[in-house]
Image (cartoon, rainbow, N blue to C red; front, top):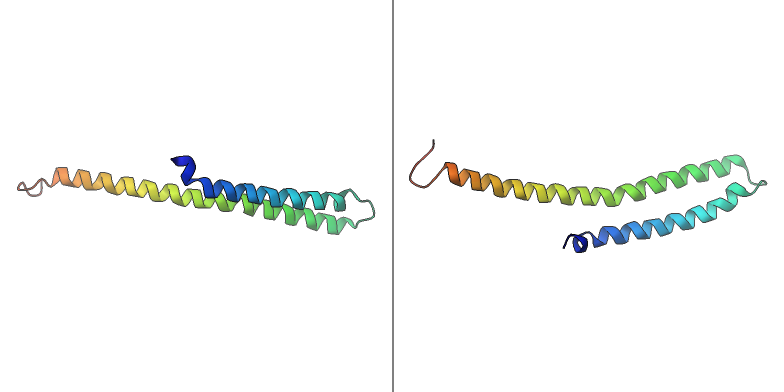
Length: 94
């Protein structure tokens, strides 16, 4: 059940990993080539690290929001149950 609910995030992570592998393989040629300017290679590496960080963060953000929502639903259900025990019908407030 949990695996099915997280399937979109898994697919997004795999897609982002594929994009990063392609980007790194293209960048590797620029970094390894001695005729390439060092500044261009450095900018390419920094941009690659930024895109990698963002692509790892976005799926985790969605999972975090889903976990927070599930916790809030459980908390609401428990508070309703406790409230029903404290305010039993006919007894009034404690």
